[in-house]
Amino acid sequence: MVLKPASELNIKNILEKLNTFNSDPKNGTTRILFTKPEIEARNYIKEEMKKNGLTIREDSIGNIFGTLKGNNPDLSPIWTGSHIDTVINAGMFDGMTGVVAGIEAARLIKEAGVQHKRNIEVIVYTSEEPTRFGLGCLGSRAMAGCLSLEQAKELKDEEGKSLTEVLESLGYNLSEFHKIPVKKGEVFAAVELHVEQGGVLEALGLPIGIVKTISAPTNFEVSVKGKQSHAGSTPMNLRHDAFLVCSEIALELEKLAKESDSEDTVATVGQVNVLPNASNVISGEVHFSIDIRDSNYEIKCKLVKELMEFVKELEKKREVIIEMKQINDDVPTHSDDKIVKILEEACNEKNIYYHKMVSGAFHDSMMVGRFAPIAMIFVPSKDGISHSPDEWSDYDDIAKGTDILADALLKLSNS
Ligand code: GLV
Ligand code: MN
Ligand code: MN
Image (cartoon, rainbow, N blue to C red; front, side):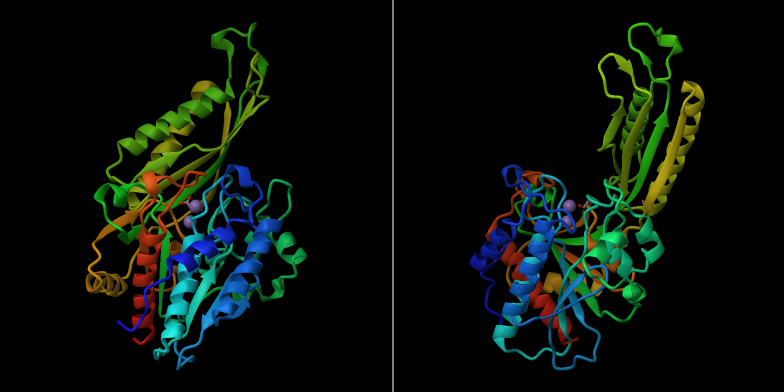
């Protein structure tokens, strides 16, 4: 094989350095879009990219591209990469592993001095996590033409600042926003490496997963208006308890997901804000999130329809007002057969056993798949844990995944 094996030490060093850009280091990793640690992490990654021979550019939503020039840069490029923002109190691997693997793979290709025709671009996608603006995959969504400047103006953080205001304050040129979308054919292929975030590979004792399909989310922000009242003096039959409405919806969601015809259906109420949140007051208002995912779009739509019918009935039954604001309704993405075959061949050549699987989590590749052929490589997550300070992946598994990634990028670059 022309390429040397990936360096576990390089991978470890960059991941550990990235982890120092962290707004709550005592509780795992917190790096929220365009906060000080996130901006510092961006600058650090750009420096690492430059050190490894990549040329940097950035678009007007902050997607970072590090390009390793091929012999024929006029051909459509090969993409790899992931994200460096996190949920609150996350681990140090979700997203970052794919960026670091991309940089390491580019280094291996460059240092081997092998011919490659197409440019290879390592990308940091802006805000894969919905942490700050309530919507995930902001950068890749804009690339897919699914986030316009007008929509970006409407996205607000907790302080009421819009995404466009934040971008402008950081010097991004919004008059170029219309240039972000990528047309079909402009990217030849994209391969993202990511930690699995579940326990399938660990249970099978396998170091590599190859993703067949990425499940896609449908998200709602729900507001319930009931009647705030006294917890002692209001009889049970005269209450309009907003929290109980939220509870009924959460339990119905669980039932619908468990009874679904797709084994990949999952549904979560993860964020709940009860008002006034006092032990002796019946809640008058509840605001909560709904996150529904599936690898089968039709089945997900059916579930959403059933949920809406349930909500309508519940509104009448409990005499409350329920507002359901749909934030997004994403479509699952299937991996490209040819790229999957290249990944399988790379595993076979290295005698690495792999498992073909569905991704329950979403990834930037879900949006990139709207305009380019994609595939993903998974490496195992210890105890299947992610979005938690306990998230862990072994560096030797990441290095194995990086070897597969580097082989695939090189092969695709010469296709
Ligand atoms: C991404 O982090 C997801 O929620 O799947
Ligand atoms: Mn995540
Ligand atoms: Mn991720």
